[in-house]
Length: 114
Image (cartoon, rainbow, N blue to C red; front, side, top):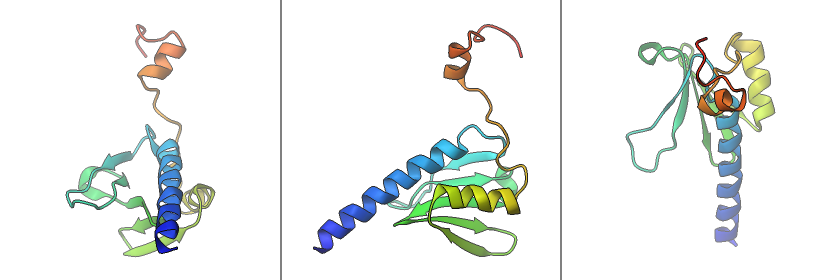
């Protein structure tokens, strides 16, 4: 029974992580930081590398947001909750995505200067 519960929790965490990646990838100010500790989850960071303001990761069944300035952990149940928190507390953190290579290919703008 415990093994089944662990597998279920892990599956929920993987799905939550995929949703966080879809939300934050290629947004200005966000960067993915691999953790040097084996087994520790990767972390999305907001702000310049030298002055990170927020971090977001998924631990077990919760999305964990950490506010550096106040040393506060905020556990969120869903990506919708993360969007709501960021909208209220960190204006500009959900700015439009920077187009990637695939976006440029789809729009026929690979060989144009922006």
